[in-house]
Length: 110
Image (cartoon, rainbow, N blue to C red; front, side, top):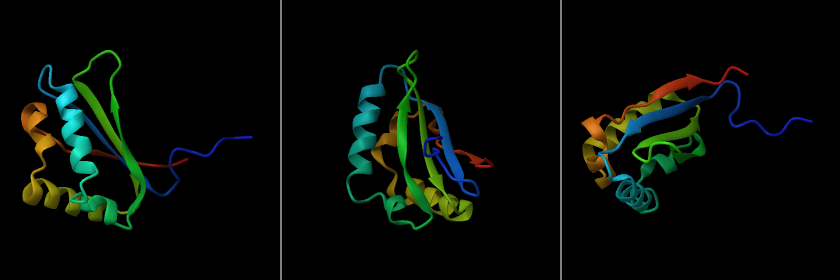
């Protein structure tokens, strides 16, 4: 018997693959978590978000992270991400190396 899949066919995962400035990983995590649980993160209010995101840290590189979540509407995610970055400018963004916080969209096909 198969286990429940990570995501469902027809939806997509947003996958952020990024680095933080050297030695700031723990500060980044604290700032990210503070924003994520602050009530200001309107991503959580979208009906297009199917499963809440998970922040993952590379076990061999403490400055390398992934943020992954399941959504069903790319246009909605793109619009909300842009609004979040431009209007809220969360503190955690200051730790991201190169300032690049743009996801890859991966369609769930099986």
